[in-house]
Image (cartoon, rainbow, N blue to C red):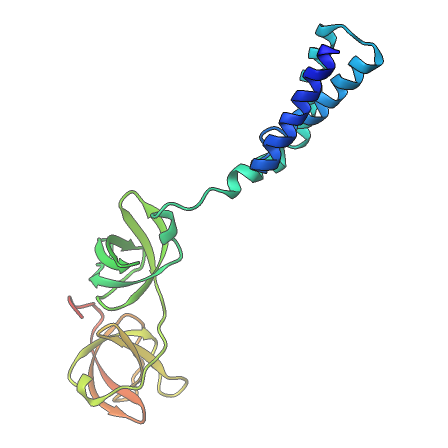
Length: 219
């Protein structure tokens, strides 16, 4: 009678704990205690047999439930503040030179950042965070939607983001971190990452002249 009470208590406690936590911390003891309770009622009074049965049934049930248990424990884990930066879009604060490190602003905080681009990424450009490596963020530039240009950008320098070819399609340039539709002043083809001077604004596009194939600082 005493063991019936013990196994019944184990069964009840396991159910109560699981009911309150719903975290799969004691659910595998329920069938084990139930089997041992039935053994005691059926006349199998050997304590060692009951303990072995309890352990074996618990182990088997634990193996069967391991996927759900793993999911239960991982479900409550959340990304750290650093991991949460991945896939976020930031704005370049300090130019990121080719092969070097600059700074970006993301989630309201300034971070050291670098890219694997074959060009500098300039202040004001948008970047997407791909990976956190130590205290640095590996990023990739985000192609920006072209804006309608205004005359105040005439005379400034810009970087060609998408190839300028007047005969086939409009290119785009980035100036002060903003993208604009662009065309060449003399119908020459200007390739990506070349540096141009904005000489005029016509028909919703900036008119450009090639300066060099390099990227100037602070543009």
